[in-house]
Length: 596
Image (tube, rainbow, N blue to C red; front, side, top):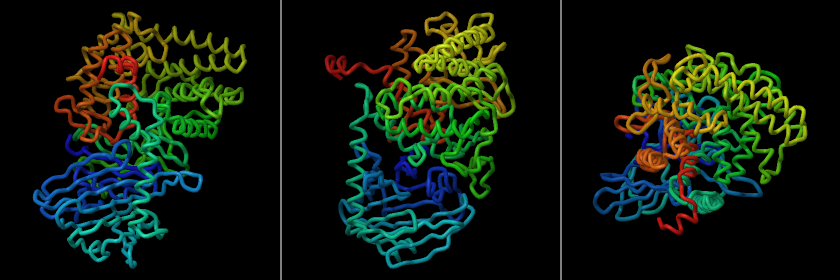
């Protein structure tokens, strides 16, 4: 797992990835999809830049953990003798003045734990995706790094000269660094850091306390839930697919994509996980974001993905100054998938928003007006259901009539029928039901192969992990012989050393070599649904064993050696872990009676 043994901290505005030794290597500023001022994750720049670091003279070990039930990271550095220092990293997040305080800010506290450790602090941001070195201006207790169009400021109570020249010094007292917007602090750094730390810890403890968690694997679910929260952008409610761009799906594959945007496809799964967790405020924010997308699009066809806030150019281009993760590029900004047709988005939206018509916890309930706003989405789904698209895996060079896309269009129509009945439009309810049933029959007629398993393409014979989702969507029962045959085919052709490949055929970029982690969670769910719980449990435990040292998952994994690949941390993977854990866990009554 070398290379993605990273921690993540954040606050719903910004996030930062930190190495096991305490180096910040990825920090987009001033929000999740912005210019990475710390870009060493995709670096190789000479001289070495794009990071925030603290180094202990003679450093021998580094131990890392999150403070319990928080997004506050602790890194303890030791020189192997008497010198030891502790580093605490976090992004402030807490209630202040009647609203959530979540500035675009990193806070780093460094304190001696034993002996007289000597440390060096290095701060080397870059601008314009590594292309521009910053200008520097100096204040009495701060440095300003000036780039094209923005400024990064660090305010600290360590000697500014030592920070400027990266000079080592004896750490004989705690020091604090505040890194963020070009604004002065309201109080002394030491007092403010301790106050922010205490209030941020209290916020996360309260947030976790309100979660619904399973009896088993609570630590894994809580960490996944916090990580999912860190992938949300509070200002609009959007949730990014991942916090990074261009960490390749496999070495040398060219599969390097920018995931710092919101995919409509993720909505159904993400809302499901947030609902099960009882993270209703985050769920409300995401639903609000989705409804705003629908409102802005009107009757036009939907794009597969959208920026987390307006005014962002999603056109795909490369960052020439950055060589890529472990030198493996290209580094991409934007995502060309935004111009694709992906018909499954319509079903995902309706399935996600349907929550509002039945969930009485939500202050904004689904009503007739919302149904009327959703109805054009169902009409578009009906029109596009059997047309070619790029599919769930966003094939760039081919288009097919994908079974999953058609099924999601069916789901949009089917759920709209239920919603219409809920709001009292009975004629619509009947019409949607009849049209959905006709489409369902057509999908199954054309997707089931002569040998009885379900192809990922209509009128084809394509094996694909997305077919594992069909029972959960309601297209057919998990006990249906056609699904059981499909499960057997997927097991035979896509299971690799305990992990499920998306598909095994060559695509636009050649033969796939890594497994998409969420597919294994789908497989676990499918096994449980057909009564093979022990197999599912073994596979689930295997995935948990391959999380990084802090319990986080990326997008992909190499089935052979278990190396994590792909953008990090991956929302889909966290969601899959949460839902699978809740499906597999004993009830609280069973767990307390049986013992752990």
